Length: 194
Image (tube, rainbow, N blue to C red; front, side, top):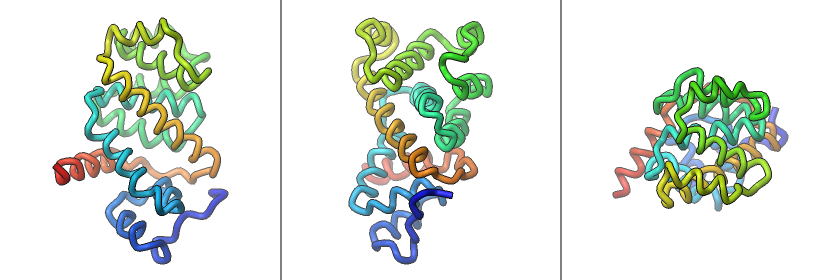
């Protein structure tokens, strides 16, 4: 059970209630709804991350799964494992990223991921581990990604690192994976807003 109660949609402020009415029924939304002035902007950032980046969606999801593995966040791993599969990740890739970096079979990593994907995973591991990637890691990543995509990747890492910390700290109860519902909702909101 979560250490902080989920927002009750019936007694929540109107702006929170309106947002919860259109979102998938997930504990993460009910928890962040406890911060009503941040809820809408937080959803907008998350929606932009899921629907408007130049960064390839598969690379985005591999990075999110690496964040979940680093923090040990089962909630994020379950939700984004399903999304990763929805954007093309193999079950082997999802399984490999569920284990801690130190315990991974490097031969299996080399077989399962392209060099560019491994560069994203390694970069994410460096950023979320010691908190700063080396110059060599940034240079290696620039062989595969444009500068814009690297900045987008860093923002993805930061956003999902925050969600993982929130989920683990308040002990979010696990939900069944929403599959692509959140991504589809974000894509629809983006196309509606243009």
